Amino acid sequence: MSLVEITTAAADRIRALLEEDGKLESHALRMKVIGGGCSGLQYELSFDDRETDVDSLIEGQGIRVVVDEKSALYLVGSRLDVVDTLQESGFKIENPNATNTCGCGQSFAA
Image (tube, rainbow, N blue to C red; front, side, top):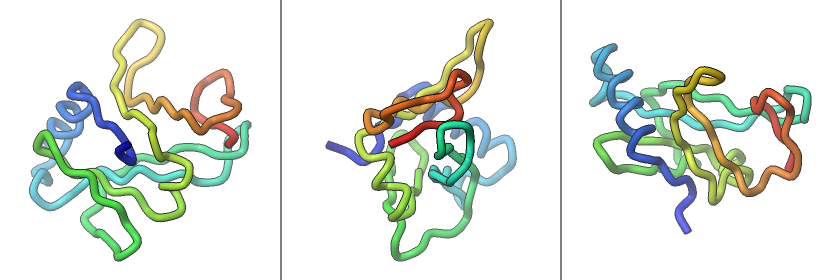
């Protein structure tokens, strides 16, 4: 099982955003789990030009995704996708480790 599965739609969106800023070659998407939100933990996505020794690197489809060691414990087996509907738009993380999620889907408990 891979740490995080990146769908083709998510990879396309990540690539487009990085190309728009001229950072496709120098930056990766960083997936992070931080404390907060109404369920206790929340996701943080950002573009980062640094990798550390404790980061896991996921490469493919012309993009790179990095996950730090602590966040990997909560994200293993997750799927990063993109949604674009009338009700929601943006990246969506399907996390099998989440035991509870809030109504807005921005935070979770594990």
